[in-house]
Length: 84
Image (cartoon, rainbow, N blue to C red):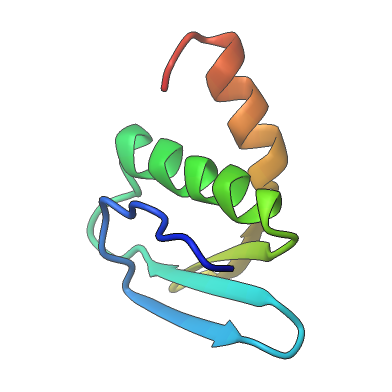
């Protein structure tokens, strides 16, 4: 990946595996959920990284456990709603 990708949010934590080309974002929800705007930005990042054959995983962690999010579904849902 030789080009910069704009990222307009700060994740709670992240891990980049350059060998497997996987970036994992971890969001901790304690007192409030992830906003729709932030979720859309993460989904857009998934799309941008996919162009370079990188994977993006999102794990949301709360006191009830963790949840993996389908970012491809979120991205195309965002497009159907006309959000960018």
